[in-house]
Image (tube, rainbow, N blue to C red; front, side, top):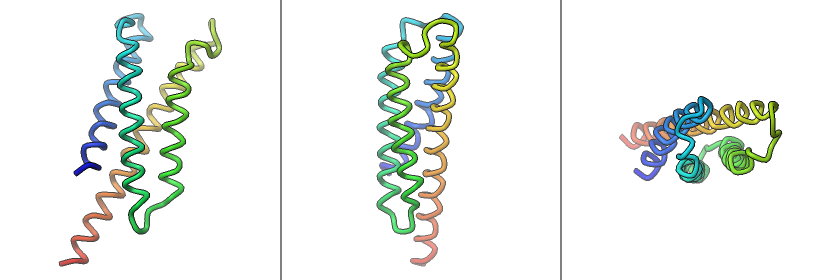
Amino acid sequence: MLAKIASWVVRLGGLVMIVLGLLFWTGNATNLVNEHMLLGIIVVLALWLLAGIYATRKGASIGLAAGAFLTGIVVAVVGMTQTQLLPGSGHIVIEVLHLLLGLMLISFGEIITGRLRRMDSGASVAAA
């Protein structure tokens, strides 16, 4: 149940993050940057929880779980420091990088969720 909640936090939170980011790019909703950052931290924590649950399962790929943890760290660091990175006209590179990292974070969440679902359905089939 906890994994399902974390998965939905990553999914829905990630979607809201993308929408907010696109609004920021167009010069809208800039008053919501702090909320965007808070939600980003919550999404990263949800991914870490999901990866931690997955990593404790027999047969889990530790590399996948570690990749999810590392991606969460990178997304958070880039997100919190991006205003200082490549200021000026080159800043778009950082914004695109942040978007791609966010999509990668959501992808990790989806991959881990799928693997957990398969592990759970395999366990119930084996128990029957």
